[in-house]
Every structure is written in C-alpha cells, then in structure tokens.
Length: 606
Image (cartoon, rainbow, N blue to C red; front, top):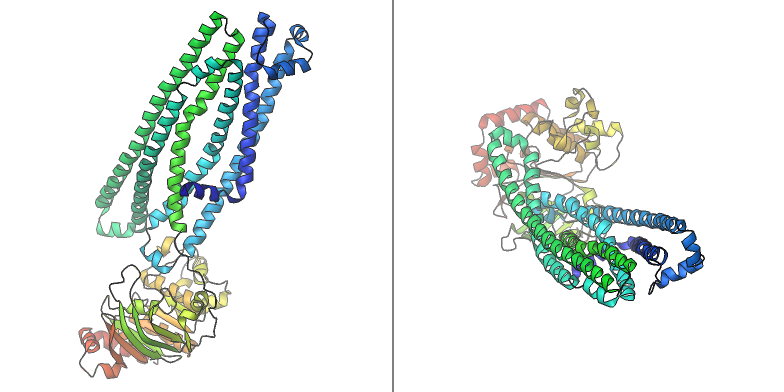
C-alpha cells in the first residue's frame, strides 16, 4: 500500500489531467460500444424484419431519427451514424493520449528534478559511500519506468473498467445466460493475473538491481579507462563486464519467461472464452432464444472486452515494475537532507580557530575513533601544517572545519562561535578547501576557475597567476577558453591541482585548506604558490596537509598526528631537534631535495 501511495503522490499537480484522460477514455469506449448495437438493429430490424428487444439506447435513438419505417427507406443513415460515432470516438482518444502524455511527462520531469535536488542536498557522508552507477540508474531508468506506466497503463486501467462495465451492463440487458457464459473464465484470469503480479514484482526487482550493478561497472570503467590502459587490464575489465552482463541477462530472461508463461496461459483462457461465446451464440440463435443481431453484439463485445482483461497481466506487470522503481527512488528521497537548522548564525569569520577535545568517528563506523581528544589553537593568519601516516586522521580533521561532518564530542570554535551553531552554507563560503583529488568539469578552464561565482577575467587571471597556472594556460591554443574534457582528462595532474587551487582562492576565503593538494606539483611550483598566497593576503588562516617536509617547512605551527591523536606540535626547527615522528620523517626524506628547497626559497626571496 505504501508504494501505491508513492505513485499517487508523484502525480501531484497532474491528478486532474489523469482524471480527464480517464473520462475521455470512458467516453471513447462508450461511443465505440454503440456501433455493435446499431449493427444489431440493422441486422434484426431492418434486414431480417424482427423487433429489437432490450436495446433501449437504440430504440430511443432510432425513434429520434424518424422511426423504423424511415430507416428502412434510408439505410444510409446508419452508415453516417457509425462514421460520426467513430469521429467523436477519435476525438476523445486524441484528448486521452494528449492529457496522459502531458501529465506523465510532467511527472517524470518533476521527479527527475526532485531527485537531483535531493541528491545535491544529501550530506558528504552519503556521497562518500554512494554507488554512482546505482544513483544514475535510479535517476534515469527507474524514473522512465514510472513515466511509461503513468503514460500508458494508468489510463488503460480506466479503459478496462469502462469497457468491462459498460459491456456487462448491455450484455445483461440482452441475455443473462449468455452473459454468464461470456464471463465464465474471467475470475480465473483475474486470479492468475494477481499471482503473476506477485511473481513478476520480485523478478523485476532482482533484474533492476542487476541492471544497477551493470551500470556501475560501465561507469567505473569509463571513468578509469586511462588506468585500465596503463596497466593493460582491458581483458580483465571485459571479463568483469561480461560476468555482470551475463547475470543481468539471466535475471531479465527470467522476467521475460514469466511474461511468456502468462501470455500463453492467458491466451488459452481468453481464446477458450471467445470459443464458448461463439458456440453458445450460434446455439441460442438456432433455438430462437436470441436474434442474429444479438449474437453479433455478443461476439463483437467479447472480442472488445477480452483484450483489456487479457491486458490486465501486462498492466499488473508494469505496475509491479513501477512500484519497485518508486521504492528504489523513495529510498533516496527518504535519506535525510543536509538542511540548515533554525537559529544557526552567520557571524563574521576572520580565521581564529580553536579545537577543544575533539573526538570523531564516521557515521558508518562509530566503533572506530578517527580523532581522539584533539586540542590546539590557531590564530588569525597563521599557517598550520598537518603531517602523519596514512590513516592518522589528517583529512578527517580539516573536513570538520567546513562541517562536511558534524562533531558530537568536543568543540570547534571559530572566532568565538561553536561551528555547530554556524549555518553550513555560510561556513562553506568562508572556508575554502582544495581536495587531494580535484574534480574539474568538462568545460572551459575559465568556467572551471569561476565555478562558484561569475568572476571577471581580471580576477580569474590573478587567481591563476597565484596558483602558478596562468603561464601554462596562456600557452594553450584557446587559452582560458580551452575545453579540458571530462574530469580534466586533457590536463596533467599538476595542472589539474593548480586550476583547482585557482578555483578556490579566487573567492577570497578567510580560511584556506590544502588537503594534500600540492602533491602533484614540483617543489619550485609549490614554493611559488605559497609565496604568492602570502603576498596576496597575509591574514588568511591556512591549513596544509602534506607528506613533503619542503611544503610545510615554514609553517607557523606543525601538528603531527598518529592514530587520531596529536603526538607532536611546534615549529620545524623545534621538532627536528628532538627525537620523534617528525624528525624521523625529516631524516627519511632526501637531503638533496631539501637543499633544492632551500635554494628555491632563497631564489624566490622567502
């Protein structure tokens, strides 16, 4: 019942259109069913000369047109009447298709927009663990399944109800016994269709999930095709795709086989029903129980109502698919959005930060503490370097500042305000972060740099100059209008990182975070970028995560993390003069590289 409510809610503002479409369908059905009744009169009253009984509609209509004697002399009126009825029926069918198409397309459009908007507002933790291929499949294939059902089968339900209801009413008025014979197999078809509905719903869910897995493999492989090429893993990836494709084929084949079983068995039932009506009609006509015209009506009606009854299985199958799709879509919509809370503030942020006994664990693994009782102060304009082994909690620590994750134990204070009281959007407008793996859009370099705001070219060039990428861009044939391809595929790793840095610093954040985002640039470029940043704005509080001592040498404060705890903290000169983790890292790194760093600093006047 819950899934039915979901489908009903998706129709939102289009319910009136669906209602009008169903009404148009009912009127089209009603007009189409009058044609056999007219033929009954033509056969019985005009051609054979027998009185028509039980056909109240035709008796009144023909009386209005001048009576039977007039019609005998003007048989062409029946032909004109059939043509007019067919034209009117066609008009109603047109509006039925138009209204249902408009409504279903609007539902699909609104659903896609709602999904996309919701996905955009899900928190960072959700996207970190989300399966991109599955999200794409739910946002496209599942939405299309719902659209198809609402466009076609939703209205077909109304058509079936009108067709069976009106036909039964007329048939019962003509002959009750023959009507019972005509409907004898109908209960069995309904029961069989319901059983089929239960089976196909389960089968489709399995098939749909298999399709999502296949989409994930395709998406991952296309994104990582350069890695595949570099490692010569084409054969492995092809085999992996074949395996998922085979699984999808088998599961979808099972759905198709279930459909084949239904159609073959339901065809047998419906053909049996038609045969019973034809035989019974001939028998009753020979006995004189019914007229030849009445027999024609029954045979005509059974052919008309047999299709919607037979179609019931397809309607239920598509309903099952739509319900599964709506459930999968609703799973996303039920995820809690990252909404702003009432009472959150927008204070002026200058860059003074204090960590007070901060402990943190990821929402999906609350047994493992990533940070343990971390405490330190950062004054406005200071540069803080964070070093440590992989998994020591470096990135987790800085990800707390823009509230990509919320802390529950301890407190982070920015300029006297607990960050949990600061509006997230406001906080992220003041805390810029350059991630270790920069993501660039498949557009021009200029649009990538001015991603957050529409900046003038002068600001873009200045940001690129500070990021030491301006001279590189100017060498491209199209300059800043150069298309960089999906995820910046046409650029080197260092170029991508520098454009990502330019995209961040153009916004003049009072707090800047470099999450190991200088790892792909050479030492000299690293020095030049940090020098340009200091010259540009001296009061920016900066966090630098790096494994390279040369990148953090002159930081105001160096924090050494191990297993989520601060083991050492101080300036470079102090830390290398005492035994500890930092000194070991310093000693391990190439002395010659350090000498190059010092030479580069002297050259750049640092």
